[in-house]
Image (cartoon, rainbow, N blue to C red; front, side, top):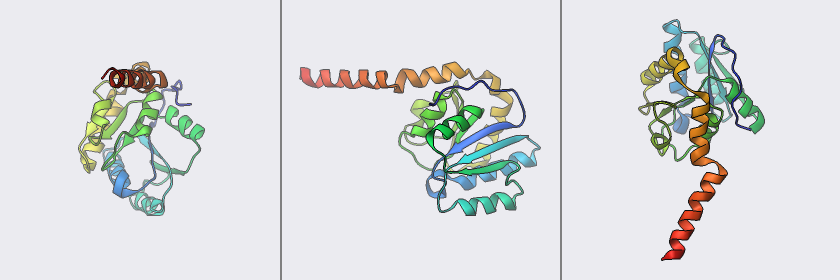
Length: 191
């Protein structure tokens, strides 16, 4: 499902975020604050936030207070996997502004769509992303997120959709994981 979609070069630049939409883990407030900074800098963009949670109404109110709601920041609620894959595939960049993570599947799904990512340096994320796949930022730094978003818009053409996808397929596809497990089992059996 998570495959590259040919993108039309059009404005606004589309970011996407998919999560359980809560602040403790995902720092949605930081995404909205970064969006507000970009608007103040007269940057044209859109952020599609996919997912639901008990704090969603609070985030919509915050976006509305900044006059961003349904102009720059769009909340789409819960979507089934096929719809999430389509939304990701239509975006130019994925944002993961988490306070903590392990190995976020959603990041692998976004990169499988061939889109670069902006993510906080948490969990295993720094092992997945390098400069060819996106940008890493500090946790809980909405200024850094806004700066990374602006850089992404300016430098988007430097990212190769197929290379981003291939990097994930080579490391995290079923055959790649099966090969890793096979090597582990062989090593254990040799002992």
